[in-house]
Amino acid sequence: MDELVRKAIAFEEKGQQLYEKLAEESTHSLARTLFANLAIDEQHHAKWIQKLHKSLSDEEGSSDALSVGSRKPIEGRMREAFERLQRQTDPPDSDNVKGLVLAMKLEKEALALYREILDGGPPPQETAFLEKILEEEWQHLEALRNVHAYLTNTGEWFDVEESGRWNWMNI
Image (tube, rainbow, N blue to C red; front, side, top):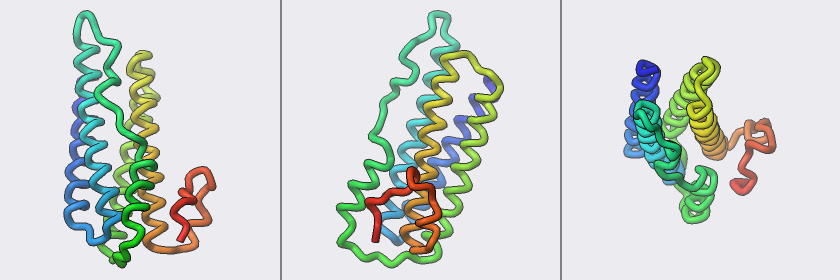
């Protein structure tokens, strides 16, 4: 299990670094805000993993391994940012779109990694953690898809399952 923990922490740190870089380079306010929020989330995930691993390694264990600190769901944070930034008319450029595509690929890899670990049949406490982190990674992917669709203004917006589309972003 130690190898899986190291792999998961390294993956989260890689994600944090990528999102920090994309936030710094992004020319679009909404994309920059999304990347900055995702970087913070990935940092939280690495801390969760470290805390869970430590609690499982301790002889007494700890039942609060998931309480590293929760944040408002990404959709709520992005909705606040969207409402705040709506008056700005930053034109999307190809680098923003490429960054979003790269980020979506990373989130799909994260989902696959955690699904693989979960499918290995971990103990109940780890299962609860993995289900929580899988949900957050799925929300990240939805956020990236929504901002990508918003910036590219394609028909893709209407192809997304209604439950995954942020209707409040309608242009």
